[in-house]
Image 1 (cartoon, helix red, strand yellow):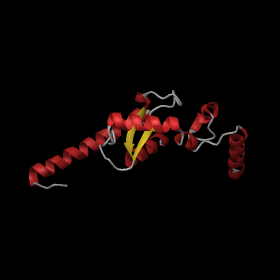
Image 2 (image 1 turned 90 degrees about the vertical axis):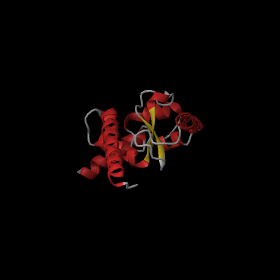
Image 3 (image 1 turned 30 degrees about the vertical axis):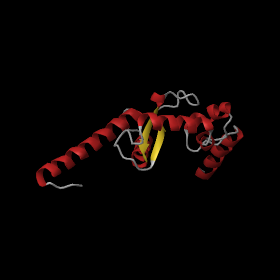
Image 4 (image 1 turned 90 degrees about the horizontal axis):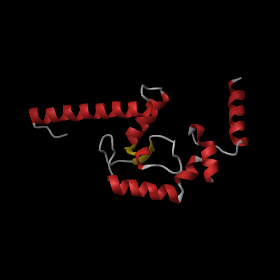
Length: 141
């Protein structure tokens, strides 16, 4: 039974002419913009230019934890998809990006903004703890 439901869902998605790589209701928007899937959009010149501009204006650091490792541009909202405002996007490291999506999938309070705020508090708490250790013991982590 479960297998049949999955096949039917996949069939519907393919019949609509679009397979979206795990990105919910973007199918119609992607098609309207001329892309078969989200990956195709991320390879577009429009996205590459936008991504380059965001990094050059904001720097190459995660806007949640300031890490410089494995950076991504994350959509805060898909409301303006294809014509994104800079405020629709946030730079995240791979770790924070994964945590944001995990929190969204688990139905965390406040959606994306709630997930970002929880993550920022967690990072601030960790930094505060590290500063205390440095001041108390002269330990550099």
